[in-house]
Image (tube, rainbow over the protein chains, first blue to last red):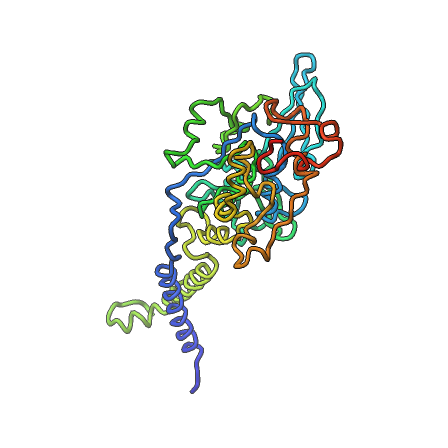
Length: 249
Length: 161
């Protein structure tokens, strides 16, 4: 059979129309399967940190590293030691965090300064700057309030790393994608607490669910002086610090 | 040839150039839709401008720390001892390390956890440090024990003497 150019174009056109109709049908009907017991709409995760309980042991940092396979030299959570010196009436903070405090701190003996520990992690902001700058929609706030990164979608452009005012993100040295605290999403969605909260010996940090009316967070927020980091940036941070010193940035 | 109306056949013959153009446009649209469908993950945009499949991928990560409730299911002796002392709220894995492999194994004794390194373990929390809250029990280990291991006097699960 002789195939003319006209026939070829006609057949090609028909095939194209058929294929695209099929693809559209697949898109409509082949949606993701419904998820099981955990209901995202019933949770809104955050964390409370009690500065007055943190002893700088670094248990949270080690736990996070073990649980999430954080590459060596990078940290999803870390602890800072503040030593605030009073110089002519000015508060001058000296901050250190040797290797993210993964092995704790060498003891501080300075009695002339106000010193304390500040554990830090992703603040899981509601209006997160990192989410706003992502050009491809690879980082997002989940329906239960956790800021996550889609590894398969991330280009590794580092915009989010620059945008985070808290320095909570890094470029994974092997995957070459942005990486950060997931608030142990794989644990909290099956009823466990985060690795850092599980292993904090003094209960300085606690995972909280703002949508649970019985969660102790409501009383905590009502009865204590709580602050978020960099409130003037209006990020909607959900990590609340109790008795945070004014010098902490 | 000027258009004079008439039969449908004449209409198609006379507007062939327009029909070819339309066909090219439709073909282009189909190609676009095909590529778009292939590239955009399923259910993209269900909760926002991202792929909801990423949530499931992140949730599939294995757990390393089994959690307090799992430990005390078997080790109730240690749990009872700890509950009456000042370490009551310190989780087992805070000292013993991640034990999900031990807890989930068919034969837990095959994944026996190593004993913690007492020399470093106790000191990380209890070494005297001006930055620690004053109410937290702290000692200068060098003066306190004269080099003896902490657990030669203190019981770690219930650290009275």
